[in-house]
Length: 91
Image (cartoon, rainbow, N blue to C red; front, side, top):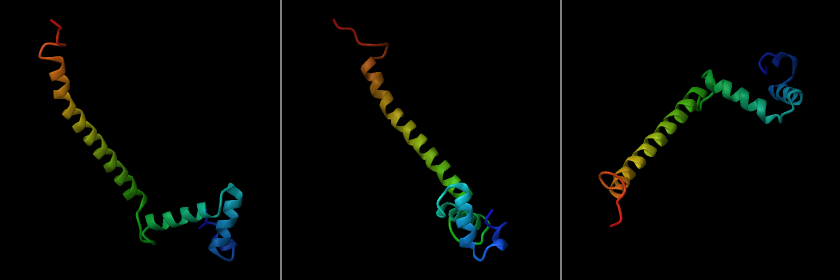
């Protein structure tokens, strides 16, 4: 949107302010969109959307693996409490 209307305004900031007023957001929001688009297209350095998504996926996988390992650690203790064939009976 910003790039489409750039020729109608004196500066990029003027476009951003105009779009922010139309969308009901602060000017920072469309400016963030512009900068993220520049990162994704290689015009600006930084983390691309695809890289950020991959990091989130990897973090989620690490959490699942850690949770599985914690559950495996607790399983033998639960078996000990239950005994070999079920709960222990009081004599």
